[in-house]
Amino acid sequence: MLMIEGPARQVMIGTALFLICMGLLLFLRLLPLTIGLPGWPGPDLGLCLTFAWVLRRPDQLAAPVIALIFLAEDILLLRPPGLWAAIVLLGTEAARLREARWRDQPFMVEWLRVAILIGAMMLGYRVVLLLSMSPIPALGQVLLQYIATVAAYPLVVFAARWLIGLRRIDSAESEMMRYRR
Image (cartoon, rainbow, N blue to C red; front, side, top):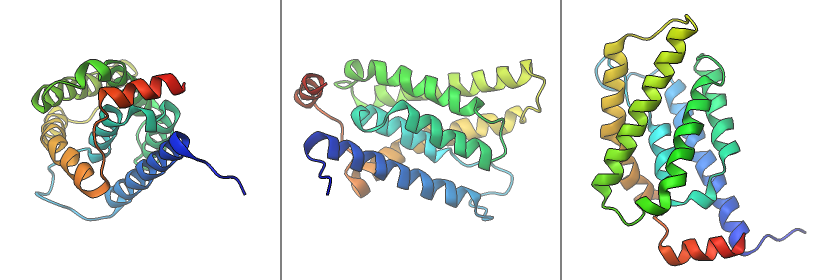
């Protein structure tokens, strides 16, 4: 029997937990239920969870996992396959590269930076759809979804901390991870 110990086990458990959470969020998104006002788009909780995970436990969430889960979401939600997945991957990797510098900042600064990244990602998605002459969602709907997603980010971070114990790594843990590689 293969036993996985130490840090590798933590990474596998964290990745599996992320996949379970994303699968649950995608399942709830596919249900024919309307929450809130009809016609108003809800927040992208999966995107919020992905940013929260990458900024708290970057060692547990590999880029291929992010790409595959958002590619599956693209296919199931009938979006252009791979476009949103590629944009999310670019955004999360940009956040991952800056995670060490953002680690000691207050949460409000993190929230602002994530809001800017999400806005840039949504703008980039819209520009690519425009250039490829694909159908573009109404600007008002996109703006409402952006506002809802940014407003939901602190709630997702709190829920992830409270429900699954997702916490930010400190500098000592970061150094230990660096030496293990």
